[in-house]
Image (tube, rainbow, N blue to C red; front, side, top):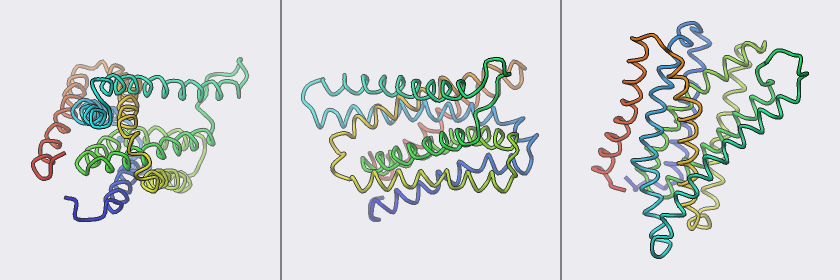
Length: 265
């Protein structure tokens, strides 16, 4: 699996992740009602893939990398510390965004969606981080990079549906919404290229990056995606969402097992 230069894998899968992130938004433009109706199913599956990626791949790989770059058990402790830093860090980032938005409006106003520039900026930063994550995991090994790309793409689809929906309801025309989101998605490539160019200089920080990424994924699954599942109370829908959550976890496990069979971690 490693005959091609690693930069080819990084660019290809980052672009794949970017394209998949736009799929939900494109469907929203074509069939808005149907897409919104079933978007919570995608959120459930995405939550499962994120959790599966964290506990089957990212954290074990982070611990292994930490052991190879440090003595004793200190590396393991650092991994979980930085995973916690990842969770708390992304919580603070989200709170700052909400705080900034909140102070842009009069307290008497009804709650409103974030402004268009804030949505675009937040989405661009998010995609940039996705690119960094994908590139960093490919620098560890190719199977880890592929699994991480799967998780990134899965959680980006429902998120982009939300972003597309907000921008449409804010009055942007569909073509402009699509153009803005394509540009935003390409920031992932920028993040991936910067990470690759830094190259060996970030090698000692790989365990930290993997751990922070784990925290990032856990935070998204626990604070953003899983609450969407709890909002659905209808019996049939609730069962389907629960099944899709578990299916996401199992899909990642199967995917990792197959990749290990082809090339190993």
